[in-house]
Image: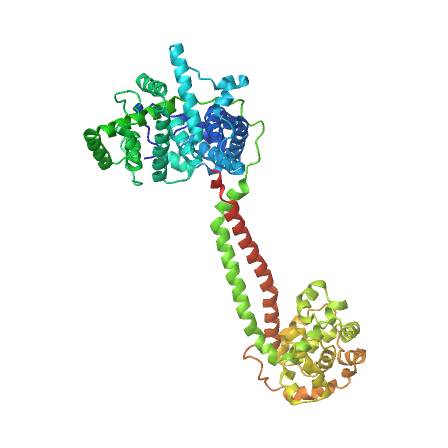
Length: 219
Length: 344
């Protein structure tokens, strides 16, 4: 049960950095030996995922940037604590811990939304790379994303972290449990409740429901 | 449910692909069923759980609708794009890696063992030290003699190594004028004085002479810490008279002095400014009577030897204690600092 591959129907391919990726493993071995360029290659490979995790956990691009940078620095400093397994999960563990520390330091919920960051004209990188085939679909999908992002922000921090790791980053239950430090049973419980909450958000709008249905049909 | 044996059953396959229903029967699914459905959707169930869920899905349309809703949510979340990093987070220079903790972790059991061993040694030294000093209590005059005899050597004539060897035995005696005078008279005094050490061990209680009376305070403060400046020179002169086999141990040690002088008693007595120097021969006479086997001396072990041994124990014990504390502190640091899993 080490890092089982999720079913194809779930829409997740084997994520980069999962166990068995020879390129990642080679870079990890070199980085453990003190090879900074190899480590930087890993950074470039995973920085989007780590930044995405911290951004959704914190909701603040500036804080997410700081936490992501700090996570990579700590990953280098404590590379010896990596004992095999999914390197991406190990990175997520460091980043999620730093993000949790930041949340505790703030003592409040995410300060801003991903949508607000997306509205920033300087943050065109947050726009989706691909969209639906029609203008109507584009608008509908954008509305669905906005609604989901808003619903994510309203989730409790513990739920949001788990649903981001499981349903957005594609980690399985055991990996999520390892990253968050909670039992698998807790992961199952929190994930199901978070999904239930998001389901209720989508239900509120027939348009959102239809957009979500089309997403499933496209898969 | 925590003991999972999930089978990748493909349970999350697309269903009817419809829209999420308006709150109808699906909204009544309780948390437990929602959790089971969610786990089934992710194929994180045992065979038994999966079979039970499939029976429930076949029998309950609301369960199927709830499962489809969860599937839509999961698909929508998976469709959320991953925001691109605003910049490169590659490290321009390698930060210092925290390797010391890794070294501590590797040496964790070694340091723990060393700390335990040091602690045991320290405890053993502590337990043993009081027993070793008991004979010294009964032969306190001997110790006093030894102290007085030893003092002059480090003052002026003995090498530094010798001075360090005897320093702890003469802490309280060293500042006395008698010591200074003995030292100036020559180094021969120490070479002979301890020879009579065991003899007066039983004598002072039996002979209440002024000399023995002056030597008595040396007994009270236990062993070498007697603060009486008058006791030591008196006994020093008494010690000249009667060397005993038991004292040869100390005598042998002291004859290693680089400057042996044959004449001791007279200069020592003459050079001692203490008024107790004169009655010293009386003590010597007492010593003559007491040269019979000293009752306080342990069989096979002279009092002076015991005293020196006990002094050696007390020298080592603090060092061992400090060592033990350092090792325990090291182990504690590695326990605190060696938890890099707080980040990973």
